[in-house]
Length: 410
Image (tube, rainbow, N blue to C red; front, side, top):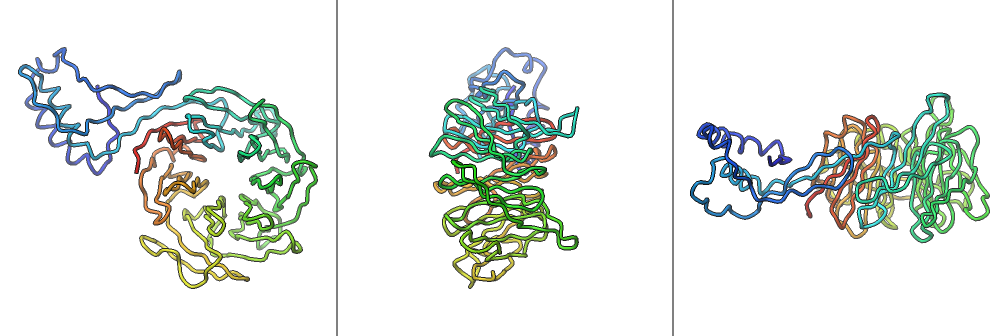
């Protein structure tokens, strides 16, 4: 039986026609041995999966005498649904809860990190799972839960923010692991690498700048709750250049820091209405933020005159930084924008929207191109696109599942 992933808005066109054809179909038609000739494409996996077929994009050939109405029905459905993007799906159940995900190469290789509370204690455990051709190829145990991680392509290493306060370093060539102690009594929540220096953040309000070679660490308090003054989660931190950092916290404030100056933010943005959980640099001048308020925002610090683009912007706000810069462009995606994947060579952004699944959007207008919102029911924390195969991998925390879906080019 052919299975299609149909968009809801198209079902009203197809279902009435299906009902008419089914009414004309006799019992003999349904028992025919004639079968469609379309090839079923399936993601190879030794785990449970659901597959979908690729519709024919040409007009069906004239039917031969004696062909069943069942086969004719399938041909009609294929023709009517030719404008519907097909989706292949596969799923992989992991041993631990997945927390972050990224495509490592163009050959359907992904890395997913896990983060889980040890049932026997209050400690958290985790690992990196290397997924190749949609199955687990390697498992790399870590000394703590892996909240987030980042590739350093120049050295073929992965740097992980661990829940035990250490920076975990994985050599992808040998899969050897080493830990750089950063802070005691805190969980690391984010990590960003630039020119041999890591910047990471924790759940008690601090940012840590770590020299990867020497292990020397410089730490400072960055975010506090407004009423208690206690340090709060610094959910995300990222390099902007060799000296400039940007951070976002549970306090809903985005700050920019110049490491050449004393530990005082040089720019502050207070326009986010809740915790800032994701910061992603697009290039030397553009910055994306994700927030619990369900908005994705673009910032351009070079201009204070007008937004980058007002087209299709549901909400558009402005904010002048202390030393220049502008809050430029935002759009509501739903579910909390937890992770953003950008690519300088692509015109799209892939966004993990927590309770609203994943969404592929146009990088210029933020308009939706493709999505799977249903996955958000199990708390989606990560999504990554393999450009060569056009496979979107996503991970859902509550059900331990890694999902794969093939999408069309745009």
